Image 1 (cartoon, rainbow, N blue to C red):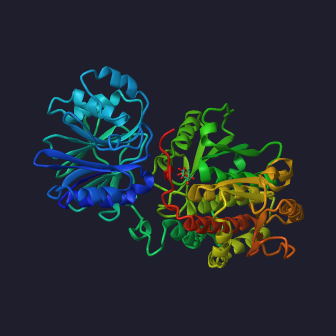
Image 2: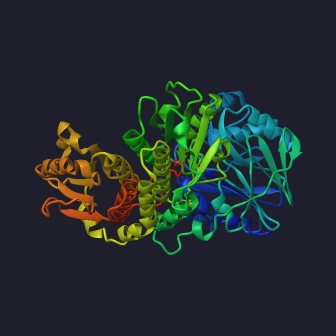
Image 3: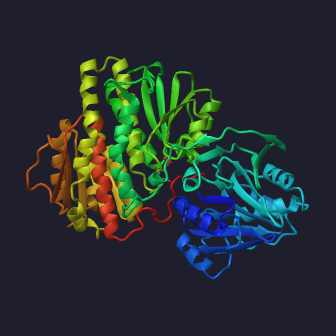
Length: 598
Ligand code: BG6
């Protein structure tokens, strides 16, 4: 996905656009550009690479005297990473920036015989299409006519030659209007608005916003009035606040997130009614992408372990597969969608598919103004605050925390655990912030130094540790580009052990007491092949002191919380490894914070 921005106000548009693009850069960082409007003329500057490159290039241009403009930071989908393919695109009298994917752009391009195209992008075709309907005065009509022909997803910010207004329209991709003091900001998400205002309007599909000295929102050509919402995000939350990276800041913020989740969902040491009782359903389908899918596996693990019987069961699905596979649906099915951004295209499409099937939908989501939060029947806010680092940490933490609460409530309703047992677990949840401090304040640099040069690193575990390994391995892959896989430790000898040679790092997670001896045997198998062993274990599990090259012990707590401590160790280890490899930790190559294209 890309980040789009539009500004109209009293300030220097160039500066505002650049600072907002900086806040949106986690959405895509292949190329960037701005277009500013002055003296009825539109001037465009764009470049390949980061906003820093654009800032540098802008030093050679005098774009200062403008109070209106649009900007873009790109995550390439259609067309290579080149300056021609960078946005803004200008065709005829129309200049625009686009986030999304137009599936039928080739057909439309065929039709636009009188136009020459400089780029390989679908966005330039949209630009030409709007221009083909434009007669110099029908801005709204030309946008409406053109967008009616588009198949796919889009958020557009548009400027017409000679008109000091910005137009915005969206379909299946977020677009928000920020309302400041005599200034307006059109943005792909809230974070970019925060330095200027926390008042905003979320645009719905096919609504057109016209921004001049004041703004109007049109639907089907008629002005509509929409409620202004107030964001509870603070600018500080969206800044690094002295940390080297957003990832390290967000890892540390998990202490506060655990406090917020406790005070939101636990009342008088009891899981409150905000956590729904799943016992009325017969099947729960958990659906998500990437780390969100990994978090849903925690719910599946506990429901399988404690709640599944002939009448009740659950499954976890990768959204891109769930969307196109066969499912039996009836009113006894609940679909739970897990998503930090609430905009991930595959997960959103699954939500809409389930709504069409008439089944109940629940979203565990962080961005409350997001499409999934607004379209779900029920939502469970993740309270993680703005998450800027592309690789999620506190987002995954909050998702798995809430998944555990869903299971615990079900177990209590099903009398699988009694009040005393639940109170004991709630006591552990209350202590979680201090456990997290213990884990976060440990030093992992020595371990990182011993493995950061390796190009292959493996994770092993059993039971719930396998699911923590999935997330740990993904994290390492995302930010350090090291090839990493995770295996059920018992499976090692049935193939993967062939990957091990002298010095190959194997990170073993040990928090499942019932099978820890089995895992220790598997560690010895790996060790006998020369692997470098790193053990991460809960303090009640003892190992021989010579078993591992490095040993990390985490506080003992309830199994419903233990995985959260294990994964935080893995998050920090990945961070330290990526730092030693001088990787761009917050903006890893080829990734984007939430993928709004299929
Ligand atoms: C990826 C992010 O693009 O999408 C991952 O880089 C994330 O961190 C995944 O887990 C799913 O995103 P979301 O917003 O639906 O949780």
